[in-house]
Image 1 (tube, one colour):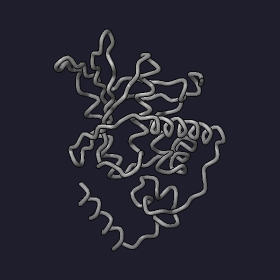
Image 2 (cartoon, helix red, strand yellow; image 1 turned 90 degrees about the horizontal axis):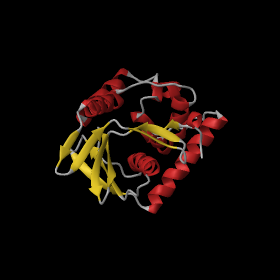
Image 3 (spheres, helix red, strand yellow; image 1 turned 120 degrees about the horizontal axis):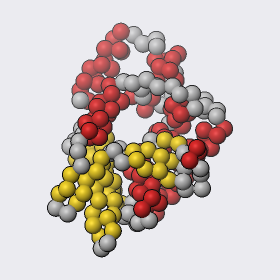
Image 4 (cartoon, helix red, strand yellow; image 1 turned 30 degrees about the vertical axis):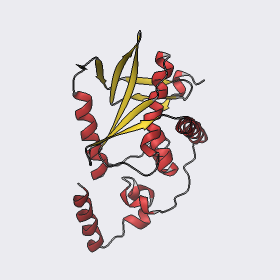
Length: 211
């Protein structure tokens, strides 16, 4: 069990799975930079969080709910939570919003799972499912919060704490996913600050096509 002072941002799990160096730059060195994709995501989240609470067909819908888990050592805010009545309890159904499209790995799913595990600890309930809404495809993906995903989420939380406790940023190592990272010029300046004008314009065109 972690103390209140030990709690780390829940969003760090997504960064851990995407790239440990990116996670360290953000949460140890406090380095950050926006690009088209992060800015688009911020706009989407701001819009979701500003919407009011709702009541639809027996379901209470809340937004921007503070959550925390002393078991995982994480804290944060949920995007949207649907509270479904089950007997004498309301069971949370977390819905995470992402501006892009569904990913092949569990990068988004571990963040959703961590939210569910926070609600379970706070409300003493069991949550079987959640969902991720992708703005790019306008699709809502239902996610089964099975034991395998929970184990991966718990493991990443432990690794996240270990990374921060050690306080050492992993060595840089280029891969294709670095091209879309908002921290690429801070992380790998020798690669990304020496591009030709032709390559720079090509990337802008590709970004616009991704909209």
